[in-house]
Every structure is written in structure tokens, then in C-alpha cells.
Image (tube, rainbow, N blue to C red; front, side):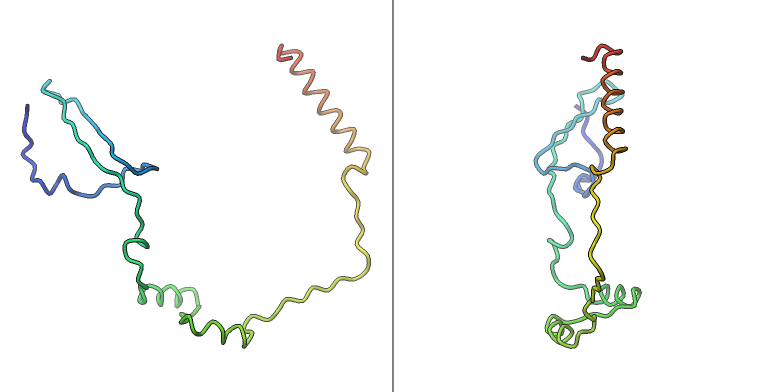
Length: 130
């Protein structure tokens, strides 16, 4: 069996493998010199940066706020913003009685539906799918 000359650190490098579920995986590869296949076992863990480091990244947050012409607010400032009504309430004005016409009240829709069903049935009949 051929021993690897790579340093141990090279095998411990994190790699993105695009797997959707976590768990233990095994892999093997045939080598060109017909020696014993190389085998490896690795563990896939689902993790995100938010879960690894849940603290606020204030410089990035401030940069995003400035780039989007927004601002960074502390949690205690939310109540004041709501009370000051920075975003005015939306007013909906309706005039008159709404006119409602359902789709099935149109004769052409019923004819179109019947025609499509007939075409579908005919195609199935021709292709022996009935």
C-alpha cells in the first residue's frame, strides 16, 4: 500500500462538497499504478456563519446601511420609530360598489374548456393512452 507524502494538515482542510444532508461519508479512488485504492472517510456538518458567530458584525452592518442609504438602529429605538410614525400609515380609498364578474359567467370560457378537454381526449385516443 502506498503511503501519502502529503503533510497531515493538507487532509484537514475544510472543503465545500455540496451535500444536502449531514453525516459520515466514505470515498475511494483507484490509483493509476494499480496499487490498493485510496480510501477516505469524512464527516459532513451543516453549519452557517450565523450559527458559528452569532454576535453582531457592526462594521459590516454599518457599511450595508450606508450603501443602501439606510441606518443602523439599536433594538430600544424601534418603539420610538413606531411611535413617531416614520412610515406613514397607508390609506385605501374605495369608491362605488365593486363589479364582480366570475370567469365562469363568460360563455367563451366554457366553450374553450370543453374544446381543450376534447382535444386532450382525442390525442390520448390517437396515441392509445386511454
